Length: 187
Image 1 (cartoon, rainbow, N blue to C red):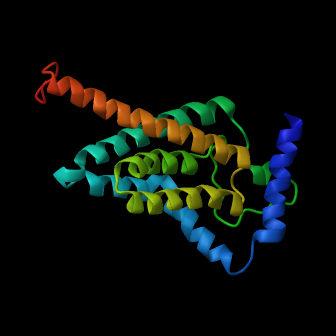
Image 2: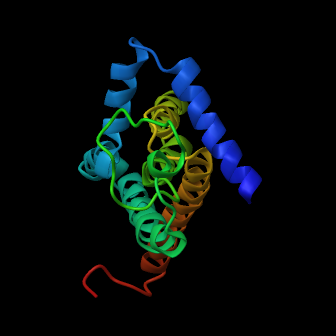
C-alpha cells in the first residue's frame, strides 16, 4: 500500500511539474468547476426529465447520480477517510479552492461517470460520446488541479460506472412492474 501511495503522489508531482502550464491552468479550472456539486450533471438530468421523449433517460441519470452520492460521498469518503493530497504530498500545490471533505473516492469522477455512463448508452452515440468526453475531462481535471490522487479518480470512475448501471436497472425494474400492473403511478 505504501508503494501505491508513493506512486499516487509521484504522478501528481509529475503533472504539477511537467504538464501544468499557463495555457491549460484556466481551462482545467473551468472544467473542474463544471463538476462541482455535480451541477453540470444535475442540470443535464433536469433537461432530460422535461421532454417526455427523454424522461426515462433522465430518471435513469437521476437514479445514477443519487446512487453515486450515497456510495461515494456519504459511504466511502467517510469510511476510508483519506486526506487530500495537498496535505500529504510534500510540494504539491492545489490550484483551486481546497475541498475540505475526504479525498477517496473522487465525487467528481463518480457523478460524472454515473451520469455519462447512462447517457452514453441511452442517447445517440455522437451525443453520448461528447458527454463521456466531458466526464473524463472533469475526472482528469481533479488530478491536474491537485485535489485528488489518481486512485481516488479511478475508484470514483469505477463506482460511477457501476452506479450508472444501477440507475438504469432501477428505472427499468420500476417500469416493468408498472407495466405488469404490480405498481400504479398513484400508489
